Amino acid sequence: MDFAAILAAARRANAAYVIDPAQSGVAFEALGYSWIGQFQDGDSQAVLSRDAAGVYLSISGTRFSDRKLGDLFDDIDVWPVDLGDGVHVTRGAYEGCADIWAWAKAQVPRATVFNVEGHSLGGWRTSYTPLFLPAAQIGALHAFEPPKGANLAYYTRYAAELAALVIVGNGKDVWFGYPRLDGRWIHRPGEVLHLLERGCQVIDSAAWPGGLDYADHRMDLVVERLAALASPRVETV
Image (cartoon, rainbow, N blue to C red; front, side, top):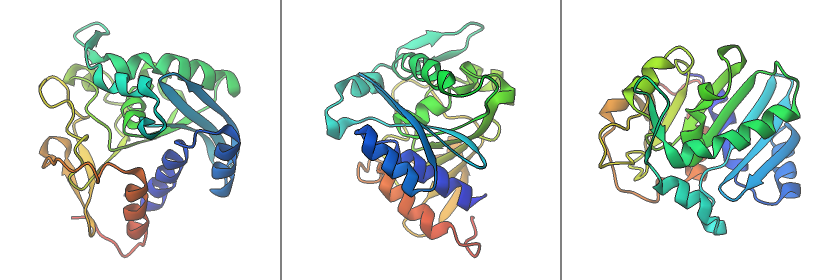
């Protein structure tokens, strides 16, 4: 795995949480990106930025500490949305995406390729990228500590578009296994980078060991652990 690219995406996903637009611009510029703009509404937040390599849509996770209760309601609403042919996604996370994408597409040229990342609710929404972009406009995708957001039929339909999606789980994160009580919801079948207190391992998404640790569901901790792995000497098992 390209730990440098994953770490860069993680840092953008972390910066996407900054609420104040001016401070958001400062945060992205400190990372070396040109800040294009920020989208905010009652249940969503995202930032567009760019560098010489491309354009990035960084989707914020739940802004719970900032009392954005609409985000929390989206987390809770896992009622299925039927997209046809047995394809289902979770309603709360999905319904917030349309406004984000309408805004993002209006900021850049029509054929722009988007690299997309996000943490938690933002990672959940990252996995829905093929619903809003044609394959030719989908760049790198990184989902950090996302809950399970779709059924097998969804991932089968969009297998090609999501083949390169990098999914990162951390420690014993309580939310990576959510929703727990409805077996239809899964992560994309295939590899997950599982960060450990020391090192990491690559596992199949179905082999997630579980966990109930709220402290492991922190984007700053994910960044910290990825930074430790960015050395070429680190090997996965």
